[in-house]
Length: 183
Image (tube, rainbow, N blue to C red; front, top):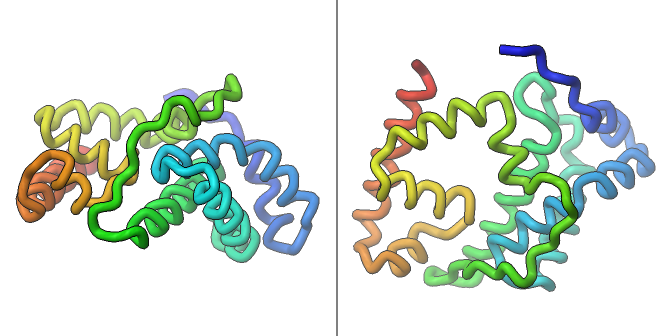
């Protein structure tokens, strides 16, 4: 495997952890469009996505000291925070809440999308290969649940399948992914 280039955002994290507002501003300027896209894709609501984005940067400000460059890139770490916050907000809407794709609201900035950055991470290639080894249905439900942020309940409703069945598909698929990634 070729050596990876250093993460230019990683130098900002210790500065943010020590209370450097300028470093947080630089991180925001470099990443906010992508994180907003993550939130918008999950929530399909501009106002809610803006609210969640603010929560994301507050979380980053409070938890920057927990970032470990040896475990993930900054973009992966903050994209995960954004995804989780957006899913939490989506779940707060109720059990049948789900996001519809809203291509007309997506913000294009010419840079790679957050999903592309996540897949480009060192483990992304292995994850993509292992996802490709799953049957089509299992790969689809895992991608919808984890990349689009759709709740299991909403996914079951969307697929007109029992909730327990959808959970079983995902659980078995995740076990297969784990085994594949451990090889």
